[in-house]
Length: 385
Image (cartoon, rainbow, N blue to C red; front, side, top):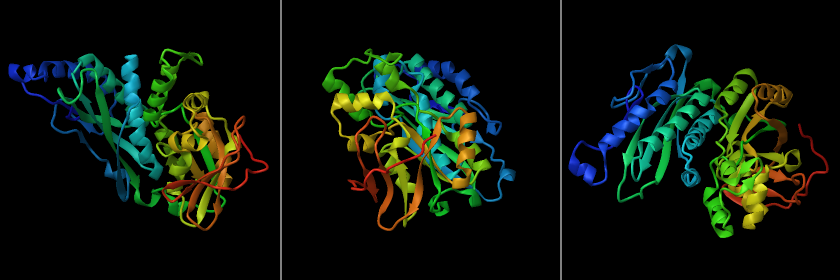
C-alpha cells in the first residue's frame, strides 16, 4: 500500500503474472477492504488518500522552535505464528505499531506517522484487510496516522498462509525537550508501567515450549485459552508517556522489549549510576509462570527474554513520582514505584534484586551489553503501590 495514505500491492496486471502466483486483482480487493480502517487512522495533517506513490503529511512547523525527527523500525516477530495458528489476524497489527511508536516516546517524540510492510505467501484479501485493520487500530491508540505501506506477495519464497509484518514510525520532539540519560539524576524514582502480557518478544522460545510440551493453543488458561493469552495485544503507551512528559519532570522512559527489564532500562542510565529495581514490588502475570514451569527455564533466562509484567519504565524526579502514578491511574495504566537511581561506579547500569512475591531469591545485573549474575543480597524491605 502507498499514497496520502499511500498503499501499494506488488504485482502487475496480466494472466502470466497471476499464473506465476501474483494476482493483482486480489491485491486490489484487499485495498478496497482496508479503505475504511485506514481512513479512520489519520491526522489533520495528512494529504490525499489511498493509491498514490507516497504518503504525504504537512508538518506544522509553528508547533516547534527546533523540531527533531525521530524514527523507529521493527517487526511483530514470530508472534505472527500464534495469530496464524488461531486464525486471528486482527490484533497482531497493534503489536506491530506498539513496537515502533513506543520506541519513539522513549526520547519524548510524538508519533506522527506509521508505514507498514506486509509480506505474504499467497494474498488473501480478507486476511490482509484484517492485518491492516489491526495496524490502523494501533495507530489510533498512538495518535499517529497510518500513512501508507506495501503488501507484497512472495510465491515460492513463503508458503500460502504465511505472512510477516514490519513497520516504520516517524515522530517529532522539540530539541530542548529530548529525553535521555543526560537528564537522569541520583535519587530519581523508577516507575514501572504494567504490560498487558507477553507483548511481542520471546515467541521463538514460547513456540519451542509449546512444541516440546505438545500443549495446544486451545488449552484453557485463565478466563480463556492459552492461545488467547499469548495473542493479547501489546499495550501502547505512547499517549500516556507524552501526557506524563508534558505535565511532570520525567527524565526518560525505557521500552521493555527483547532483552528484558534490566537490559532495556540499562540503556537509558548514564555512566556512574545504576537503576536498582525491587522485585518485591510486583508479581509477574501467570503466563510467565506457565512459560517458566512448562519449559523448565531458569529465572535468569526468563528475565533476559521477557518483560515479566513491565512494558515501560519512567525515570522521574522523586518528588513527582506520586503525581505520575496518579496521572497514569487516571489514564487506566497500572503502575507502581519499583526502584530508584543510585550513584555507583563500574559498568552496571540496571540491577534487579530481591524476589517477586511467591518466588525464590535472585539477582540479575546488566554489565554493558552482557547479562551476568550479581551477588548483591535482597533488600530487607521495599515499597510498592
